[in-house]
Picture 1 (cartoon, one colour):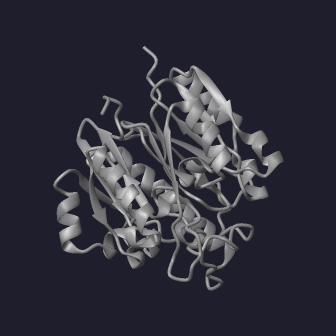
Picture 2 (cartoon, rainbow, N blue to C red; picture 1 turned 45 degrees about the vertical axis):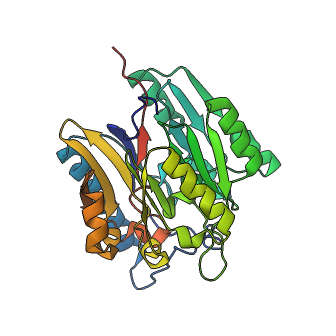
Length: 308
């Protein structure tokens, strides 16, 4: 293992002014819910407040939060920025091809410019032209990155193309580990980060959703060989977003950020195992979760080196 930190100390978050579950993503996102009982204005207000509260909570734990607003009406999933860009310890930024057409407008030059002016950015690798070939790789939604061991775990889906993954791994120096994962209805997991989380010392993962026993064994062996322990989640816990978590770090320590929904689904022994390594920060994002993603999707970790 090298000394590249898994947990970022700063993050980017997007606060939407016109949040709503995205009708274009409903077909392959089984986590998405359309709650027609809440009117559009109230839904937007609740999501706005949840992002504001989440950012403030992280800042209270010493995490640097770069909070951007989205005042447009054309990007209902903008609250999930980790899908369109990733950052890396060597100063690289990746910009990614998005499966759904209305998500492509989420890519923002002003955020890349801000990162370039605030951190040391050596290059930006832009894969968005892959959309012309219908090749998709939705950032750290479709890939869960083990930064320390240079491993990119990636579930095959509409949002993760093997060819695009190969380009990323070649350009960024990662080993790609692609595999299949399905829910009990046989539907592919749409994003890898809803069913697994890689932290410094452990991995949360729903092994039963990897139906192929050989692939399952390969994943376990890869995780254990990387020096991390496996904490197994159930599919029911995945449905409650327990897998959609992210480890962050500040001068106050290392923390696992998970939604209140996810934390509520954990068993006491799972909590005890996690807390051997990190403290858990539980944040209520139940309105945002209607869109089929949770707190990890809302956080784009910034691994870039600081400017001196």
